[in-house]
Image (cartoon, rainbow, N blue to C red; front, side, top):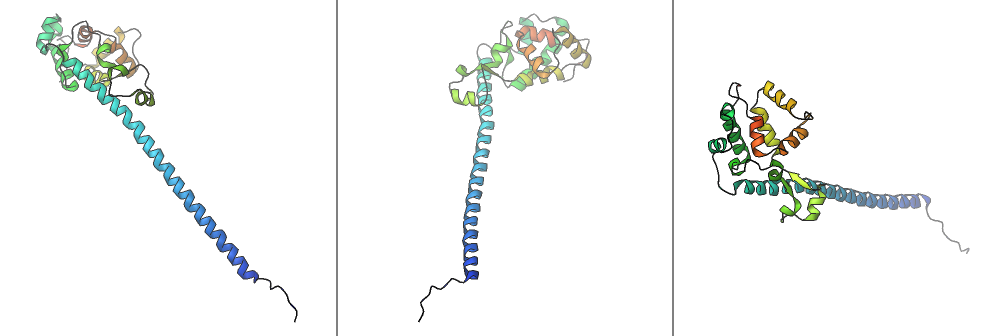
Amino acid sequence: MKSYTRLPNLNILFYAILAMGALFLARSVTSLAILLVAAIGMGILLLVRSLAQPSRIDQAARRLVRKRLSQGGRKTPAEIVDAWSIAPIQANNALVLLEALESILEAPFGNLAPDDRLGYVFRVKLTDLPEISERVWKDTGLRQTVEVFGTDILYVVETKSTKSWWSSRREKLTPPPNNDDQWINAIMDMSAKQFLEFFAMPDKSSISD
């Protein structure tokens, strides 16, 4: 009897190879899917973290500024107008501004001295916030300071002005501000008294409450 080696059934071999390839591909796709899901999850986590950090810093800075505003002997808006010698023609509207500011700041504006520069009050450095690490601060892209309540103050002075008065205020500044950031920078360069005198409209102008 002749001896020989039986050749495998080619159809069976083909399907076996195909099945092994499919299994490998399935495992590869599964692994790829797992890696993709993990990458997406990590990206979402980093995004949430990056969004949460500015909020954390902002909240800490706002607490500090409210603490600054709450220190010392508090004056009522009427006492401020009198103590700072605000012109009688501006007195009523100065009261409106002060009351609106205290409401939106949730802190008394009347603890400020007339020559206190607003930038010193509303700008906060990393060293002012011991609860915030340097790494967290840098991760948000901040440099020297973070400024809080700037947009709130701008909102108050703009809504408590007529269009003509607001335009006249703009023309008084050099250079005239063209956007909110420039307006806020101009405000932060003012002292507390300068700010009140600059934005409180004369009584002959109507003001919206």
